[in-house]
Length: 159
Image 1 (tube, rainbow, N blue to C red):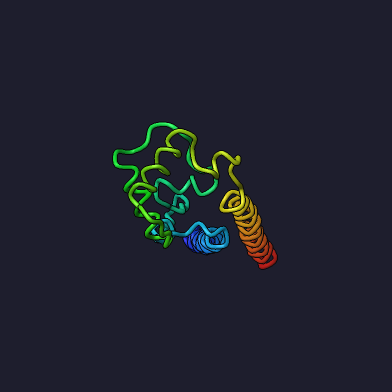
Image 2 (tube, rainbow, N blue to C red):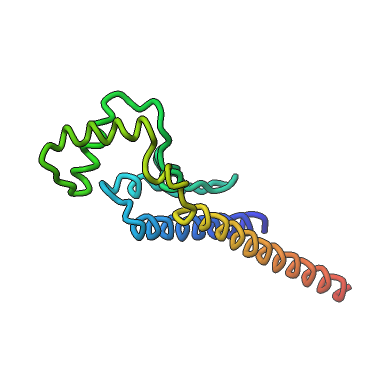
């Protein structure tokens, strides 16, 4: 009986995390943040007996927070240049433009960061997913307890 319950819980967690992943992808696209698609491709659901995880690449958090100013990776302008290519941004001197954008981000952070960020890509979705999972798992356990009680009553009645 415990094995069946564990499988049901794992299936529920997997289903909810996959739905969360899809909703985050939709929000990411609606916000017009998609450039290369690497962030979307990095999202993976992993469910074990101990719980579930929705993985994403290390820059995933910046979808809502933006990037604060400060130290940037070596060759950051090349990352900006690749982003420009991925987004289809064309300017007269792309390398110079990428360098200037990288320098501005290093000094001041991204515009999203300077504007205070947002909470509509994944934060609000995570809260709803946790609430749904909690409710559904509670219902699963409730029905299992009811099943156990019915079996117990049947045994008592047969004596």
